[in-house]
Image (cartoon, rainbow over all chains, first blue to last red; front, side):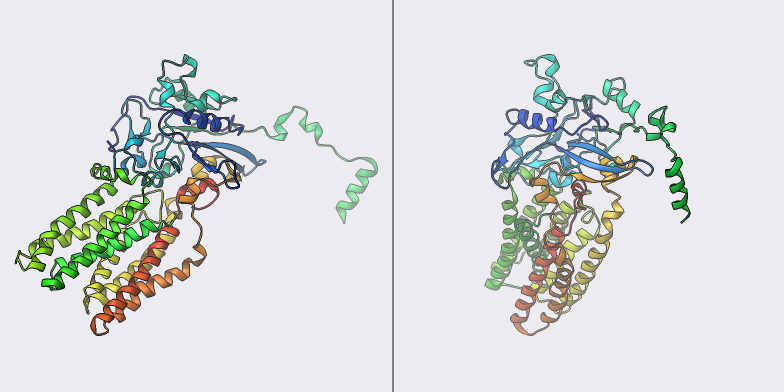
Length: 245
Length: 290
């Protein structure tokens, strides 16, 4: 059970576009909403209306500042959730067989009925993808909405993960990364999609698309050279004089 | 990492328990009759109390028996098997010593080897985790084995071997501290690789995803007590290794008792540090080094 499958038929996963993500946290809310009533025990909150609220989430959106060498700093919104790794360290450390990776589609899941809540899988994951539910004492993680994507009771357009379905900017994409012709694979190829922390040797399925190159002020407008205004007259004289001091 | 009391008690007591059982089983503390009963009982008691403490770390301990199923891939499962098999293999030897059955000492030697395997398996639960670079090094099994052997030799009152093992433990502790300090940087993970944003520039945290705490921050981004790390390291080496080496040479059982108690204080300090000082790479996402 906790042996990883040598290969998986499909590699279902997410492609997250850091260029288009606006950091609205709609995916966080949609994920929490769906997983409150779907697969396994609900995602609990502790003291939600009190002074020190906390709770279990399967997806969290960070914000980072990046300072390029020769350009203005940028804000990057960064959703973080399970990457459904090929070499998932969270699966092999599990002593009970509760953690497993599905051979058919590569989704990493927790069988909560077998989870003893030892927390070792959360320690083994470099990405913080797993959170122990404080109310139920079992490990929770992204299921890639396994109870949506194959659910024939839902209209076809809803058969994708809740975070993808809800994203208002189309920054999240869902598909088979094993199929080189799939929309997500082509997106990864075209935009240079990459793995997080490759040095951990986890071989993640999910990919992140880097922010596109931003326009520079001097490339922004054909009129830009004209904006380089030189002081003339008295101001010009003052400029030259002050420059000499 | 959060230094959970249950896990600290588990690793320290089961470590010294199996270390002591190894010495008794190998016949290095010749005992018979009721003396044997109490000596074996102490070894079993320490090991079993330690193993029992580990269940307090579980969210659903009622399913703990399932932890025996995944020995092919999981070190935690292997540790469960190793500890139970060891205690079962040693049982006839213990009965033989107590009741004078005269069973061959070979059973004890096999059991002593299994004791050390059990401690090694315990250490691998931590040493296997790449996401905690400080643990993910050969020094972790070395340190756990050094503690088990030293504690066992002190309890067994070995007047030559115990001080020598104490010196070995001091060396193991210092090596672990020094190499461990470099591990995070050597692993090469930083906010740039964690986010992939090193492609465009130098990344820093602009805003956290939430204002409150969460499981990850509580469990893996523990920072309390790091400011006392240096003092605790000194306490670990002095109490864990240096003082017991001298105390065990005092005549009588009192010397052994003192040596063991001081050693245990050092062992608890060292194990607390083992967790509190270990940085998990997930801390990078939160702007901490762990």
